[in-house]
Image (spheres, rainbow over the protein chains, first blue to last red):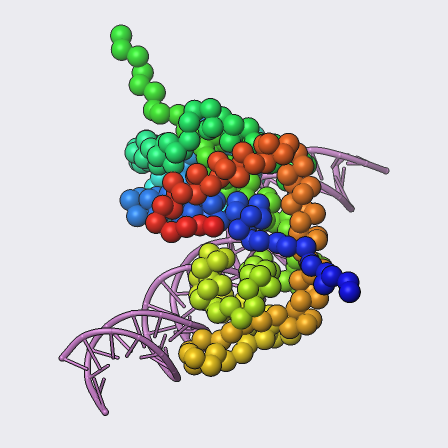
Length: 155
Length: 155
DNA sequence: ATAAGATAGTTTCATATGTAACTAATATTG
DNA sequence: CAATATTAGTTACATATGAAACTATCTTAT
């Protein structure tokens, strides 16, 4: 009598895309709540501030590349940040379509307030891992990123 | 003359929450497209099918716990799956509030079609890593998950 | 046995998000 | 130096999502 055929098993709990998604959401939610509660910022706005602090005068398109946000999301985040006075749009002299974006003094102030909190949050998270494990995790994630999206550099 | 003070640096590209988010999105998007394109299913619907296949007769609440979906998302995914005939709702005899959910034969058929594709997708992704690295990654992610969300078990 | 509270699940409503269409400006081609 | 194609960024529209309110049922405590 032939055995009943077993379909390939797939346990969600061991399926990498699922695990990644759940882990990422858990982490994101923690810090999103921090940004929002303390500063009224969305994750997207925070990302825009971070790259603008890093590269003053950056364009919306470049922000999109660095943050993996699409241009509509960038446009909205930028508009919101200008609205609350953390970001300033300066017309570009050599290309009238783009603007050079810079943090205002208020924006810099908030940014410098957030950075240590964000780093502390990250530190607490990774404190569960040894130095060596942290390095290894970063390396493995890099490999995965390349495998998942070979076309464009994720980081 | 005092040095100019340097604010703590925060490069998005090395900030774990950001990296996790980008990686997870890249991975999810690949498979979401597969489910949708080939079978017209959302990720949420797929997750519901996966746990229902694993545990026939499961309730919506249990699905939520296993998939980390909130009850509204579960409700909608279930409704959609019933609509296309992949899922069946059976009234529970002992508790009239809940239903026992089971895949229909059509649902099982689709499920068994998807599983090997999903596993192949995962396999391709992790093929960038050695066996040892895969195990290590799973272990490190487990630690992170616990650190990020100590209250409830993520997996 | 009954009132108060808890639970399962759905619906409603307000907001977030992505796609496509659009405007304005620059670059390219003949 | 037009005509055409590209690019930067915004707006409009349609869909997705989450929080809160709601219905129905079950549990608990008196």
